[in-house]
Amino acid sequence: MKGRFGMKIKWDTDPKQDRFDPRDGPKTMKAVVTAGNGGYDKLQYRVVSLPTLEPGEVLLQVLAAGVNNTEINTRIGWYSSSVTTGTEEAATAEEEQATAKADGGWNETTPFPFIQGTDCCGRIVAVASDGDKSTIGSRVLVRACMRQFGFESMDNIWMGSDFDGAFAQFVKVPAGEVFAVDCDWSDAELGTIPCAYGTAENMVHRGKVSQGEHVLVPGASGGVGSAVVQLVKRRGATVTAIAAKAKMEQVLSIGADRVIDRDEDIFASLGENSVDVVIDNVAGPAFGGLLKVLKRGGRYASSGAIGSPLVTFDMRTFYLKDLTLTGCTAWDESVFPNLISYIERGELRPLVAKILPLERIADAQLEFIEKKHVGNFVLIPPPLDG
Ligand SMILES: NC(=O)c1ccc[n+]([C@@H]2O[C@H](COP(=O)([O-])OP(=O)(O)OC[C@H]3O[C@@H](n4cnc5c(N)ncnc54)[C@H](OP(=O)(O)O)[C@@H]3O)[C@@H](O)[C@H]2O)c1
Image (cartoon, rainbow, N blue to C red):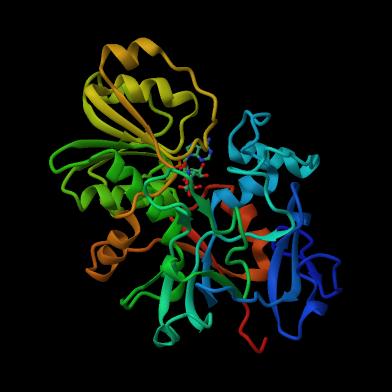
């Protein structure tokens, strides 16, 4: 089969000699198995065995699974210190030369072959023998970032990066990590939420954004950035967003008070000491200017570096202005439950840029890294009888 971009997508029904081998059991499902570091040919659409529940787990039928940079980053091994460029450049280069990287995962070595997919909107279809059967049938979101040793420890693991995720018809997860959500949003709309909005709310929370403050948001057209804009506005702060010229109108419509073209000189546009908080997942060459526009005592929070992970950092700007720089990956305890309540109270809106069937994952990722869109891409697994 060939997708829109002419990528060959593997439709592979042959049994494999790996833990997904369908001969291991009578129950099967369709899934995208990522075979290892490399290009799109590593995404294998296969018939695999259904997950078996351990105590404390629930089985979800995946209704919708969002697309995130982390799945591309993990496949190409972008988290390796040997990679010094942004995601798009690295992903394109990796198509030409796939190299296995032992340190290419965000955390431990990536457990290839495995099923990626960080975002899951699903329905509980089974619980382990010790589980609560009354939850069967609930539509839920999965808290993708899991603090396996409790919230006192910063250790965390992610669905779809450290263990099998949602690019499948079914996924199993710890019962304590699923949150029922009562709203009229579609499955695809809910599928945009966990990774982007959870990460965004964690930064807004850690950055201590409060009413009346001025917050600068680079990458505001992206999944995380557009969520940050909404989450900052719901706290009563003012947003100056940074976006590509073609997306500026759309970013204004999300709620930003002002949008600056990303090609403009941010320092010249805003001036020194004009911003209370910067929430930045772009980094790259603009980084130095982002610190200069912060007021004395200002805060900078980041969960990503899509522009480039290596930046020029003037220590004098940092210490002479009493800045606080906060790295954010492990979600704090209040973050995900709060997010669910904002959705249920109608305080957020989803931004679905495109919906594609799961088997077109390579097309989705190719178009996603072109960055012509605003918001999030979502994949829908095939119907159970399909
Ligand atoms: N640590 C974590 O737990 C965590 C969780 C989620 C995401 N992340 C990371 O956060 C970053 C943003 O995620 P996202 O989901 O918001 O990504 P996204 O949807 O792809 O959006 C990123 C935005 O950044 C802007 N941008 C500016 N310079 C860019 C460049 N050189 N290359 C690509 N985009 C550029 C683009 O907007 P314009 O075209 O309008 O400039 C783009 O819309 C990624 O690196 C991701 O891996 C980390």
